[in-house]
Image (cartoon, rainbow over all chains, first blue to last red; front, side, top):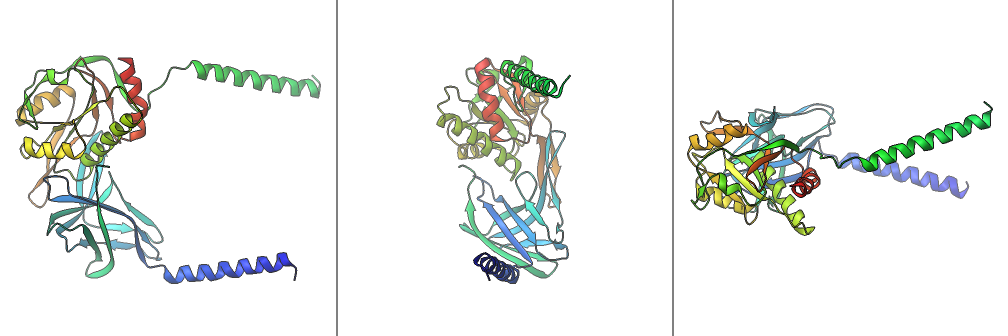
Length: 145
Length: 203
């Protein structure tokens, strides 16, 4: 076997090994780009943004998000219609199979209401019906930098 | 025409075309990215509101500096802080780049029932020094917004509370106190940083 052939084989084996490993650790639902905003002065509510990635072959529906740090979390969508900003509550978040959903500024997002204390770290737990799907935790982000 | 002449003609034609293009591009006036400049700036109407300190706010308050005016409310968790964060970032960037003319950021409340001067003051201060919060009686707010084409309407929520649907545009008021340009949403810092200096230089 020439050195080129052997290095190609090694690279291939490494690739197969890495791919197999990454498949093993891939959770069904993953949250990234998590930003939980601190409440604005005088306010008892805030917003949270994140990307939810569905790594399964089936759609995932999130019907509730709860947190020990907030009495109530609603799913909302900001809309811009004919130059008018609106915000409406939505009842669920649908993440298609093998796709991602961005909860982002000016779009779908979480509205966190009535904080239970003054925590610096906020946990969010995502449910589909009674089924727990995912728990994440993140420090608060500010909007003045 | 022989093959050599044909190639020469193509090369010459391309060179001329690109030369003309460059010349046209060089002479083209600087274009704005998103701002719509009002051809004939209009004076603000008569109105009587208050700022975060309880001081009177009227048309004269908008004379003497450039103002970026946004109409929003403090109970708004997404669009309003996002817009004000963008405007504050633009102002910081202008300061960092040594801009001589800086706009003031103004939030006019479209929820004056809940937005007291104190609450509005804490809110605008969060985004930096020198910002102005404006509130007052609902009818007085409407006398300003209706004259400027700004829409707002309460939107009841199913938990017995309410939000406010509102125009998302940011208005630019010139130092003569005239509505002179409009930035439509979505707002991005890059667009402001491109357009604002051009407009403010031209005044």
